Image (cartoon, rainbow, N blue to C red):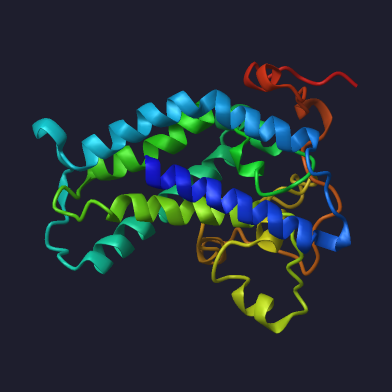
Length: 261
């Protein structure tokens, strides 16, 4: 819990600093914008849930107090690096399909649209989510490593490290930084690790015509499963429109109050 929290705080600080130094399109966002304050406030509101679910996940994954272990024993993976790679790939693959379901299943989208209500992207945008969205996302490692796979023999650092990579990817992909497609290095890295250009197209307001880029850390899932919608330049508008729009208030979003025009 402490490790992943520190990783997230460090990623946010670095992400906001880079957004100020290398802003997308040369346009700097306000230091304390409404969206930033709303994102951080949402994280604070959901923090008690995070603490409880993280502690539960660690206890379940490592069989604390003789608890239930997963159905598929992964004890044959003895090398720590292989344990880490396995956990990371399983987590990232599961998050891709959960995220895709968030956009394709109406009941799940009802809650996930809170995250898409932001109309400006910065490093804190990943913090904005509905409590239901947060609960099911937090359940992913519990289900994977408590019910499906037995990782009780894995090194204690492996699972927090795998989760931390996802946290860094989430922060990096939402940053308000320039990621020019014309740059050979950026173009090479575009489908290696989630990034601001790739993920910006997931937040385009024109999602009816351009719905995709669900990956958490590895864009390869979108390439393989046909959901890559990346364009050379970021979209002009973010957020959601029409009758899907929500009031921009801390409790209003959790209550799913629709915005009145």
